[in-house]
Length: 218
Length: 227
Length: 91
Picture 1: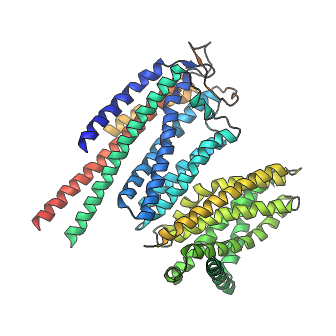
Picture 2: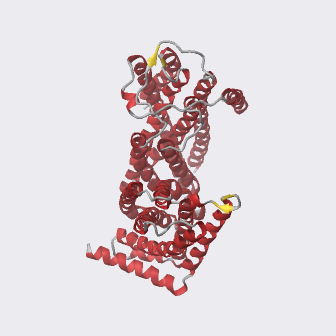
Picture 3: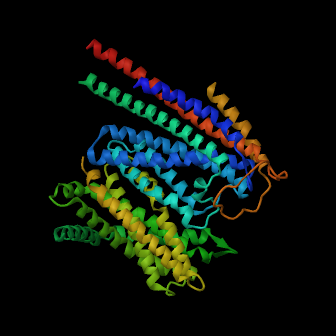
């Protein structure tokens, strides 16, 4: 496990540390200028928020239907990461919007649905923490609904009239921007895998501790 | 299939019979919903008079709050008398029990809405008879969406700690899209010239939500209720 | 100590972003693609630098805080684990 882990840490840190340099070298955007550079962190974070919601949902389904304890640990790790990356999206977005749209926040389809997705996973963590025994199952159901919500968030910007740029933006990037963008995506993915692994290990450790507690009590 | 429907019907009849004996939840929920409408009527004022444009929103907020209360109370009664465990022990399809409980909640909410809609029409001069069939469709679809998720979570929370506060915490982020669609559709109907294509769009979206939520709920009810 | 440093960093960056963002601008139509350009055009009314720096700083800070939280939780569990293993060996 450690043999894979150490290179992974190294790769993630290198990528993430060099991302600002890559972003600084990317060309400016015509209408938005400097502030558009927030895009290079905002969009990968959003992508990972969706991915993490799927991971959490699938792991929760495995826990509910196959009673897999390992799946439950992956689910809680992924759930925390949805909240983390969602927070990044919800803070960097308004900072960008203030300059690009003139307002901090707008109740359009994309922003509203993203906020709700984030809140669903905050509720997921709250239920796990304060729900008492059996709360893993409740939280699992919550994660399934959250996962079902993700496609809705993604397409909302294409079907409703919103201020938020459409999903076609990512596919039509010019080479200068494209390189920087996908580099940042790679950095964030490496970081995500790293964080998920570490968080899951934390859960494994907690499970071991609980088992030992039960063993010592007997 | 027939067995499934029969079990659902029996569970619903059981719930309604118990409720009709005391009528406790019906009366208190109706009163609570009416109080909600009044609170909003006095909170959202322009030049000392209630904001008429807010009628659609106020109607749906009251439905959501009253629904949450009704769900909590109904399952509290189940927990108190331990009938939920008895239901789970019965050799019947778990999803059928879910559908039965859902139908019971829907009947309760239908009664509450039957009182709420005329009240909103009266207090806010809302044109509830402009397109009554669309209003009915929107309310029905929205209530099914809200109640389907609510029944699942309220049933799950019966054995959980902090269940009173956790029900809204879990329910609202998921059902807010339903409320949004309901409000927008109803607002389109309550306009000076009712916008039927808009109402149809939002009603279609509500039906889509209903299908997704009911399917997910039926699918997850069994593993959630078993130890 | 760590918490104070973090708090100071955030507090120095946020007012800059807020103070800089005072003027409003007309929101443009929904964009379908990004169009790159060589250099920045004429100076804009609302300075973008505090917002960009603020955004990047927040990302780093959020990740640092999370990693630190993981570290703390892991350390606590390791201590509990060592303690329990000692107890099990005694039995």
